[in-house]
Length: 505
Ligand code: GLN
Image: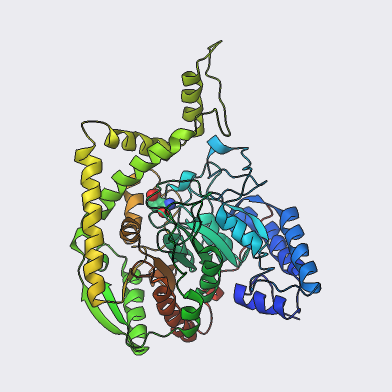
């Protein structure tokens, strides 16, 4: 057989495995070999679990041979963002403060992957505690964009986007607090979905901002994301914000790819000015493809989105400052003794550890959040931000009266160069202008490749947003668009990415 197993989609691998044409060990081995060859250049992984992945693959192969009935994705390997607790595997969140921490338990999502028989290849790189849009805030060095190694793969989930884009894994798990699944997907020519808030359990997801965080799928096709979505979604009594309702029919929607009669709302505030010309051009063409597929286009206005970024950068730091208080040198990971003190107090050890263990962006947000929550400022900052959050949810509710889904470019630009925005936090924050509103309102969003921008030949993303618990609509629109675009391109967009030079890990 000539199939390159690293290039196969998860759906194709599932078929091959189900038919017995290939073993999970062969698939897992091929992906690990690919990692050994290219991850020295891309740096998608913080930790590769070769032995664990192969053992899980062998277990599935044995069960299949014994005639056990297995999950459709059994034997299909996956990479997991290093923000999810994995029993027996290091979990650092891209931070020095968690260096050496090995969780004694699995996140619910991870337990579900294991129960489905999916070998976990390793843990992917990320901005420290998921703060950033480029992975440059990882304490372990940035990941790189397979389309151009001098460019960012997005963030905070740039490890998960690049691992999929560089054919080291067909699937990965990301988390999206303000866009960290969707923006990395956009700039790497991959697919990423942020489910409805509460749609996928957060138990065992190291919290950045608890009211915004949501884990979800990263893949190379819309159907693959839907298949993974179905594995990880559903009620979990261990997460008090988990939605106790049936999982939306995402796989069925991805397979049908039917948008006829669907009302597609273009968000006026998320197009035009501020968006790179080539990104905007691919967006406009994508909308036309959906019209050709039978959708109807309406224009909607969400005036409060103007304040989304400001509200987000008060709410997120406030919640983060509280969530990160637990990294105190007593309970997890790093412990640093302060210089020149014989018998330091607990507070002095905490201060020295947090100073050494947290990077600049994390410190910036802890200081901002602590300030915004302090008495005397709480109402003026945090309280106002919460009111803006309500207005944004109201804007969405109104827009969804005239549209079934809303669309926009996912990110305003294609991948920028490493180092370009590192010294300018505001410029970095602005990359999430189109993704943040969905997190503030708790609604689901998907990014699907829209093509390559004329200026730089780099991928652009098309974002679809739907009302809470209508995640299936994302997949219907995403799959319809993907089908038309790949036909127009004569194959998947990643087929046009340059071959990676091999740089051993
Ligand atoms: N880039 C955004 C931030 O820095 C989003 C992060 C995320 O979604 N985890 O907060």
